[in-house]
View 1 (tube, one colour):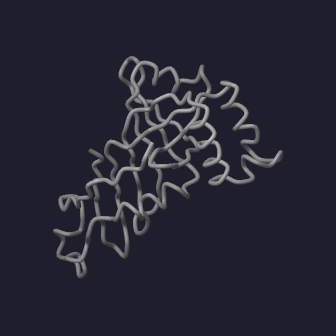
View 2 (cartoon, one colour):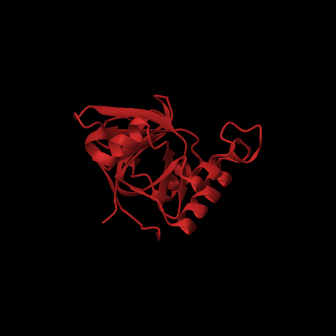
View 3 (cartoon, rainbow, N blue to C red):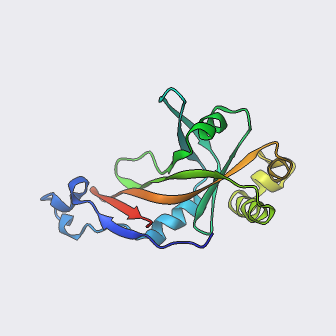
Length: 182
C-alpha cells in the first residue's frame, strides 16, 4: 500500500493554545513525520478491539510500521482474532507514561487480514528491522515469528490509518493533533 499523507490539524480545545501560560501561543500541531518516526521505533502498542457483546478488549502487541500501514499479528484462536472476525474496527496506541514529556499516538482503522505472500514478507522484514534480535536471534523473545506468519500459525493484520491522534507534552505545554487520511 502506498503511504498517504494526512490532513493535519491542531485541536485547540485540548491543547495549551488557549492557555495563558507563557509559550502557549506557540503550540502547534505535531507534524505527521514526527508521529511516523515514533510509530517506526515504538516497541509496544496497545490494540483495542470490540467483543461481540460490545465490550472493549485491550491487549499489548508488537507492531511494525511499513509503507503507511501498521502490522500486528495474533493467533487464530486468540480473543483479538475472534473480535476482528466480528468487527474489524480497531485502535493501536503507543506512547509514554509521563505527564510532562512525550507523544502518545492512537491510530484508528480497520484490521485487514494479510494473505498476499509479498506483503507478508515485506511486513516480516519490517518487524525484523524494528525489533532486531528479539525476532532474528534464537535467544530472542519472538524468535520464529516470521515462520509462524508464513505457516498461518499466526495471523497477520494490516491497519491503514483512517484517523490518528497525537497528544504531545513538552515543557508543561500540551498539544492535541488529529491526522485525517481521506
